[in-house]
Image (cartoon, rainbow, N blue to C red; front, side, top):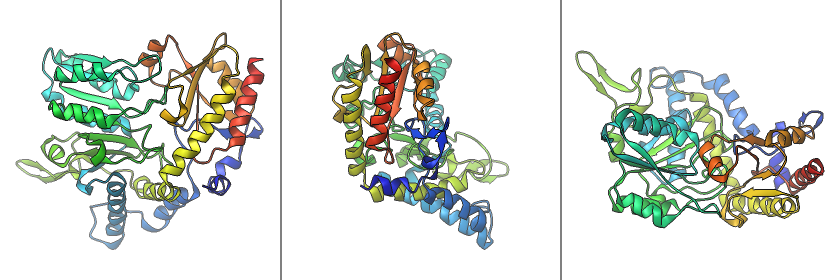
Length: 400
C-alpha cells in the first residue's frame, strides 16, 4: 500500500487550513474524495446527464444503465443479489426506512432493542415509533473496556423484542461488535435485526451472507464516495413484504383506479435520485477494493498503534474504548482533565489539524462514559505516520 501514491489522488490534501498544511483526521464524519470519483461526477454531467428509467432515448437509457451498474457493483461488494440493494440518501434514511416499514409490528408494551453505543441515527427513529406505539427502548450495555455484554444481549433477545438494531462499529469507542454472533442469536429467536455499518463498511470487508442480518445500512460518503448516497441491504423476501417508504414517481407500477407498486428495490426509490452520486460511488468501491480491505485494516492499525503510544504519555488523558487497538476501527476518542474538547479541537485546527469534538451524535454513549463530549481523531487510507506523529506532538504542546 503506497500511501504517498494514494495521496496524489486527493487534491484537497495539498491545500492549507489556517495557513498550515491540512492534516485531515475527521474521516469518521466524512472522507475526502479521490479524483477518480470527482472526475466521474464531472463526466456524468458532461456526457450522460438525463433522468433515469423515464426516457426511451439513448441518453436516458445510458444514465439508467450506469445507475444500475453501481447497484450491481454494490451487490458484489456485499455478496448479495442486486434486488436486495436499495439506494437512499444516507445511513440515516436507510434506518428510518426500515423503522417506518416495521412500525405496524410494534405493539403497546413491546420493546425495541438497541445498545448503549448507538449513534442518534439508530436511536431517534426507534424512539419515535416507541413513543407513538406505547412501546419502550431497551439497550444492551457495554463494559469498561468498550465491549458489549453478550450474556445480557442474549437474555434480552430471548425476551423477543419487536425489532433489534445494532451498530457494527462505534463512532466513539471504535469497538467492532460481533454482529455475526448477534444475528445468529436474533434469527434463532425469530427477531429481525438491522446492522448499522456506517462506521464499519469503510474499514472492513462487509459480507451480507456471513453477517446474516436482515438489513445492513451504510453511506457512500464515509468510504471515498459522494455525499447524499446511502445503501440499504435487505433480504429479498422482507423487501417484497414491506410497504413503500415514500410515495411518488418511479416507485409505482400503475396509478389509475388502484395504485400498485413496483418491485423492490425500485419500490423504495421514489422520485429522482442522486444519479451522478450513485454512478460515482462505483469508482469509490473500485478504488477501495483495488487497495484491499486487509491492507486498509493493517494501515489503520499501524496509525492507531502510533497514536496510542503517543497519547498515553499525555497527562490526565482518558482514551475511550478498547485498549487493544487491534479490536477497533481507525479512530481514537479521548478526554483530557481540565481541557474542553472544543478548545483542544480549535487549538489543533490552528496548526492545520482537523479533528472532531463534541458528543459525536452519541449523547447517551458519552453519558455512560461520564463525559459531555470528547475529542476524536479518525484515520483513513491517505493518512500518514508523519501526520499522526504531528498530531500527537501538537496535542502534547497544547496540553503543556
